[in-house]
Amino acid sequence: MTITSYPFDNQSITETDYSRLFREFQTTGIADTLGGTSFYTYADATGMTVKVNSGFAIVRGHAVYSTATEVLTIAAAGTQARVDRVVLRLDPVANSITLAVLQGTAGSSTAPTPTQTDTGTYELPLATVAVGANVTSIAASATTAERKFLGNTVGAWTTTTRPSSPRVGRLGFNQTTNTWEFWNGTAWADVSQAADWSTISNKPATFAPSTHTHPWTDVTGKPTTFAPAAHTHLWADLTDKPSTFAPSTHSHTWSSITSKPTTFTPASHTHSSYLESGDTISWANGSKKPYSNTATDGTWYAVWVEGSGTFCRNTSARKFKENIQDFEIDPDDVLKMRPVIYDRKDQVDEETGELRPGRKGEVGLIADEVDEIGLKWLVQYMDGEIDALRYDLLGVALLPVVQRQAQQIDDLEARLAALEAKLS
Image: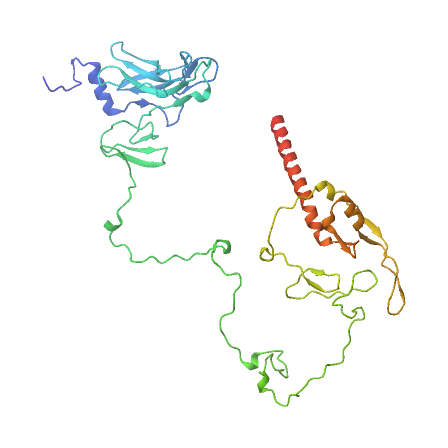
């Protein structure tokens, strides 16, 4: 007979027939809210065991009901880790649904596949258990839930626990993606599927933006200043206008100027008395008074003064130099220099015979001491005798001192970091 119908009075019906019938009423799964505690599997590091909460489930049309927490033993893994799987096992031959542990393969990170036949053994996965090598207890983090839950009119599941190969049109809410989805016969599809723009009818040609505002900080490319737009003002509207108008700054060509003199006598003027015949600037020997000017816009240089009193700008570009080499400076020699405070000797003016007192309380260095240290390149000579110092080169002399100290600081910071790392 190829057609069987049931149940009817006085009819012999097998459990396989009832299983097929009840599977149409309800799918296989845990009778609980998605994420509930029914048949929840967990570990608490109390030994090589996992625990399974009480609960109710339907496995291929058969019901199973547990009223207490069950403890399952997990076999030790030895030297190679593995992944086990906890299942509810339907055994039609034994007429029972029991908890069981499927032991994984040593050294594999994949849990064993549950047996799921139509009329024989059927195993409903509850959780996977990661069994570490040589561990003596199962940590709480070692279990991963994978229960499937019963549906109502529609189902609820996660991406990993949704029904396998349901009928076309099976509808449910996917908690992993927060979307409604349905089975289209080959895959799960989002209910709110994207529409092809070309197939949408009556769509507007343009979209005017709705009234809205933007915070000033969100606006990009804005100018730093805002020039006023071109506009005019009536003369009568202007206030505080002057009664007369001086001519604006302008120029005239020399040829357009009339009645100009043929010669120009020099205007009355004087020269500073500290300039001597043949000198271009005063000597800074303490007996002649130097004058200073206030800096204005333009190019300014440090100057070199020759023994004759002439001066020139102090240039430093590569284009003015050749035979450029490293110059070794001993930082210890630089540190030997002794800052001092002193008084300039009084001088007699050679022209007037007037005694001019020297400057008191000057701060500086003694050129003779710098020469004795060995920093002769900082010393200036006149007529074969020590005369002055190149104070403009003191910054160069200090560079190796600063560089050495910077290196020492870097080394000390590295050592300190290493010590702190050992103590932390």
